[in-house]
Image (cartoon, rainbow, N blue to C red):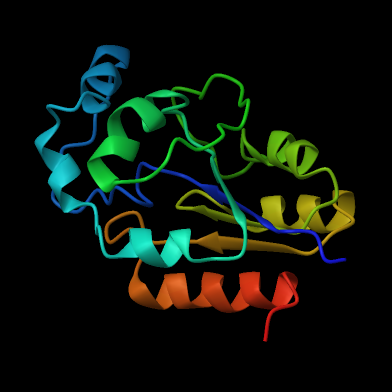
Length: 168
């Protein structure tokens, strides 16, 4: 029997593109960014949601939004409440010269299951670490933070998930 793959979903720069947005630079700014009143939430491509829900996989939030993703985004996007990866606190600044702060936890969460991770902050170190430390299949898809997840990106994920799930 084939195990259902996981798809780890990031929010900022992935589902919620930064294009034209003034990205927060303070803790308070990020708190306000994650409120339903954030006008930039209107830039999320809602057409992606049915395609994501149709995938033969288990969707999991993998975002600094943590449970706020279910509180704010799920109702906005007509998504069911999704499991939330138990991530450590996000760092104040991202450093692409070190392993991403989510990488180890997501591999532990996958526990050998095939997984796709869609994020705007992935790098070569993450790919190398996953390859060396994860026994299952993995797709680490880095998206452009300005455009977020595109139709082409989603097609890549769909094809990978169907192959990993053993679907025709």
